[in-house]
Length: 291
Image (cartoon, rainbow, N blue to C red; front, side, top):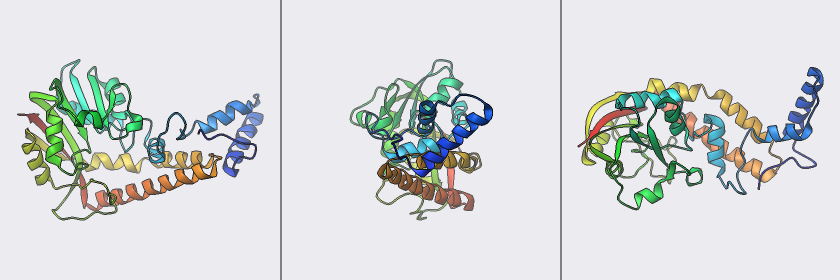
């Protein structure tokens, strides 16, 4: 079901529509009510019906930008792309591609042939694939590079994920892994990574061991926390616009679901932001070559 304005829309929707009507009068142009209602609803894609996308994905995209289920930007994506030093028209695989945002970044910033994998089954399509199909078979090693965004720590066995990534690469091919890392072994960050998921960030030494076991030689490692923090800090406008858009959803049940998803998302990223700022957590990158 797509949320629509009914005969008695919610207060937020009525106020937004009244504001647009007043603006049209003030500026002296004709007010097209149907078009204005559609524009208000277009501020946030609504789950259900043909899309069937879960609320947490819709909220994440509304906050972080089209195609993104977590903080990111074209500059952040290209930061790792440049580490690979690849030729034009190289074949590249992106793990942790969200709803396609990193693929769009690479399409605009490079001339590579790119495909990606996501855990968001509802976002899959075109050159963005759902992990399930690839994990259930052996994969052809024809890619020249891999970029992985926050996937090592999302797997209960990082070495197994490293082996999975290595399947796509020929010997000597390059890879960059970016992930959350704890500063010391045994650190507990339960609020940053929800219970019931396999996400469990490791120390740098544990990631190094996992990548070596997966068939990679680590050439460089570094801390990219300073580059990642602004992606969270600068997203206030996204949070605000998402909240305003959710307020325009007339269906009370759907509006409540979206608000709960937004609350959970806000709590999660607030905790991660504080952990990153305090030094309990950091963003680690490792540039590697396939043995």
